[in-house]
Length: 135
Image 1 (cartoon, rainbow, N blue to C red):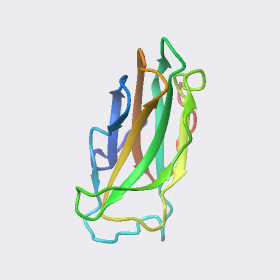
Image 2: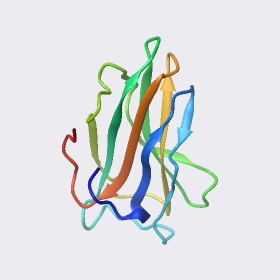
Image 3: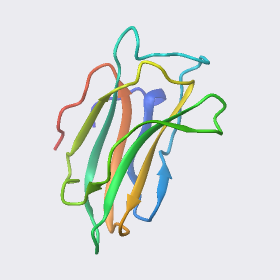
Image 4: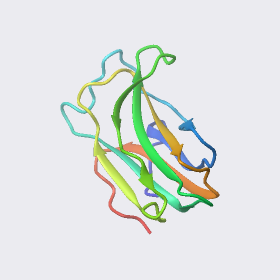
């Protein structure tokens, strides 16, 4: 994983294997009620599979970015469809432009579907540039 500001880090090699949804280890507090940090200078949500996903069944993972004004009620502002375990190899990367409008608090949610995983780790953070595939 590239060097990342700790205040913008959601997860660092977070291992989640059970169904259903798991919040990122950290939430990001942008310090303002409506920071809209994606508007002036585009920022990126980067998610990397740092350990290949395996499952005894047809395991999938969906990723979402959620925001909150009060750090307790969360709303999905971006999400993927379920991604099959065969796609989630080490180095698989998602780089998504941060939505221009969002609330103060942000978190990533990993949703495991179809079958529990036997392995798989993810890192997620916000940066000024999109990350490219990392191996």
